Amino acid sequence: MTDQTATHEHDTEDRPLGPALRNGWRRRCPNCGSGPLLKGYLKVRDECTVCREELHHHRADDGPAYLTILIVGHLMAPLLHVVFVTWRPEPLVLFTIFAIGCVTLSLYLLPRLKGAVVGFQWARQMHGFGNED
Image (cartoon, rainbow, N blue to C red; front, side):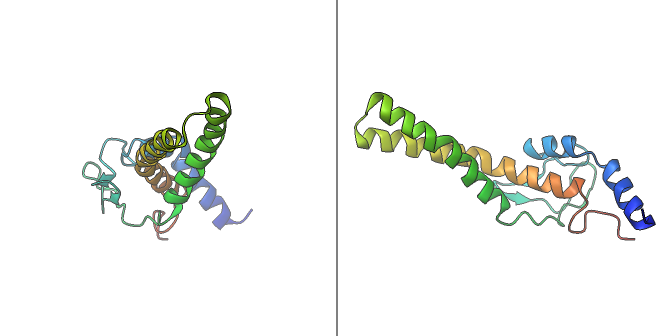
């Protein structure tokens, strides 16, 4: 094992993944867990208002949107099938219920998944979150 590999493994041990993901899911700073991660609905703050951890390094981009689509699709598609086969509701009723359900679930998940992605990047010291040795 090289010194560089040992240093990298030591750095990731200093930032446990679980708490960073939980803090991100709660839309809190992955470092301190108490400062707000987002300002507004999806905009990540440049730095934590509590511990001053720089957060502008994140590269969440389209990842949270893809994860949201993946989760909502995998939950709602089988549920749609079960509801249709079991109760045979009118098409407009079925559409209305599932459209509202998909939009609501998407709006709930999107900022939480964005926080979790930023927390993951922070914990793994990706995109400038690590030491700049």
